[in-house]
Length: 266
Image (cartoon, rainbow, N blue to C red; front, top):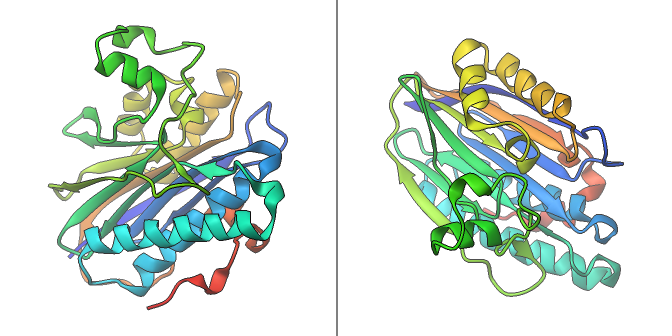
């Protein structure tokens, strides 16, 4: 039976006053959410979304992981909207969301926004997610060279997210996973500052996933730490089913950031 074994680190960085990233890492589900909105409660959007998706996956383990993730994202979006309705000062809060879920056989990636998912296989790093940003749109449409993305003044303009508005357009991808594959889920606090080559080297050099996550976060902070940074590093393993809820990180460590913990239903 497939499962994830890994470790994660979330850090406020060197510039931001608080952490608006939220993450969850368990043996069968992993989530990274990067909140936006500042005073409009980005940490509420990210923590609520990460909680709802992770809790839905835990409650529905064994079901089709694609359907579980779709249901989790739909309910997370509803919770974010409810949070805005309950407190209009939160108008404008939103979050990215990148998640992996498995039923022990299939592994599915759900993604919206500009956090990222990577796969390291046989020493080669590949990006599994596609950035939903204006700059990526320029690259996709041939208006900008891919090498010009780094440092572009509009690089953080996100075109798709979980917010208080219309239902998000979610990317859903079933992955063909091998035992030994290594995954990285991260917020753009890492990828805006640390190039893919350096990311790959850290993932290859360090056998311990927690150590690899820590080195990547340190690299982002050493490069300026201009944003919150969250990294989850996970290895695909085969073995008997394990019991365990998982680890919460970042804004998700404060239950006050969750709009309605009772919103998840089996």
